[in-house]
Amino acid sequence: SQALILRAQKMEAMGQLAGGLAHDFNNILTVILGNLTALGDARPDDAQVAEFTEPAITAARRGAELIRGLMTFARQQPLQAGAVDVGALVASVVRLVRPALPACLSLQAHTGDDAAWVWADAMQLENALVNLILNARDATPATGHIDVRVRTRQVDAAQAAALQLQRGPHVCIEVQDQGVGMDAATLARVFEPFFTTKRPGSGTGLGMAMVYGFVRQSGGVVDVRSRPGEGTVVSLWLPAAECCPVELAPLDEPGPVPGA
Ligand code: ADP
Image 1 (cartoon, helix red, strand yellow):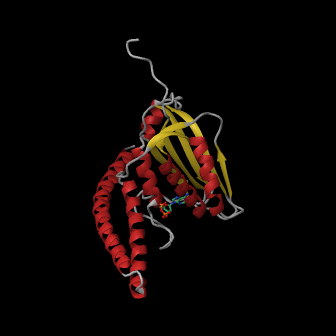
Image 2: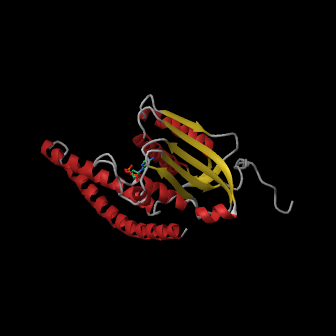
Image 3: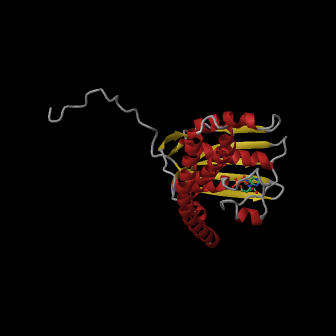
């Protein structure tokens, strides 16, 4: 666990660096985008202006997207947290990404019967799962299997120490593939922003960094187990929500009269 702590410290330092850079770059891009758009708007009928501004605007937007990824890693994205039914969310993500996978690749959700709720930003959790499933797809031959499992787990003292988690109830979301797996050198750098083994243009190296940042910000941890040739299991451990959302009385219903 000394190695785990060292890695956490390294990721923390990278997060701070990336956060500062992302913030300044975001401001710069905002100025560039604003002025390019204004230029295009000022000469709406000038084809030559459009010929130069449009690709520049597209590139600047792509840059803004990368910056958003970096900000998620650096945990500078505000989270819109709420109670999330993880089983339902996983089922909907699986439906959503199914069309992006080769037809003979099997993608199965195993959500179990237990209620599994977390307090998190549903959209970010969705993004994280999409990233994990697409990574599994990229690692897997077209006829392989990807399994997504949702489990509720009581984390005891030993697991808490091993995984750097709080004790108590957790929801564990696992994405498992039987693909190419990772060697030790890749595994050690998997969360680093811009670390990718994919060819230029097909990977940004921000997917796992974003997953890491989001899960840490939500009070959880990401555990990756992988062996070359055997496949990969990525587990997101998130603290279980205290209770299922309670039915709130509608706003227009008068409450008890004080002192009555
Ligand atoms: P990208 O997908 O753009 O490369 P990620 O941050 O999502 O960026 O992943 C970083 C690297 O981690 C990948 O390039 C790949 O080498 C490795 N990786 C991630 N997920 C898996 C997986 N399921 N199987 C094998 N390797 C993986």
